[in-house]
Image (tube, rainbow, N blue to C red; front, side, top):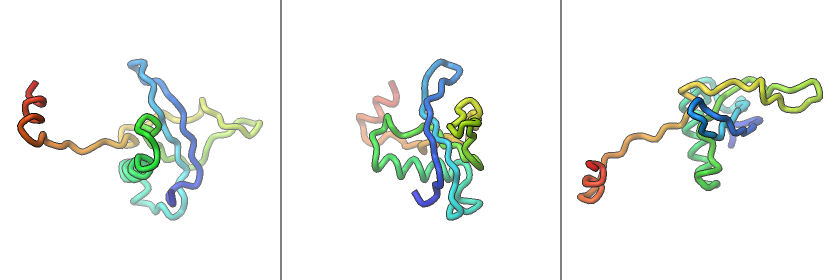
Amino acid sequence: HAWVREAVVVARQNRAGDKHLIAYVVCAPEAGSDEGDGGGLAGALRAHLSARLPDYMVPTAFVPIAALPLTVNGKLDRKALPAPADEAYALAAYEAPRGEVETMLAGI
């Protein structure tokens, strides 16, 4: 994607014990200051990856960072990666039930 200079995806466990894929993204200069932030970045990258990958391979959250943290050996320092904030998650908009069957199922 044009907004991404570097990225890494790791599996993180939340408080409930569920594992989620979290993408840490170093934005390219083309991302701009307003488009490359939080929800806009998450939504754009999620849509881009959803068109190319199965759902289980698309990260749940996209965290913009200035640079990937490295160990003294030059490898990725996974422990130094920050936890994702709420705006890092790409949330789907609510869609009302359509038709009689969906309305009945939503009522259940």
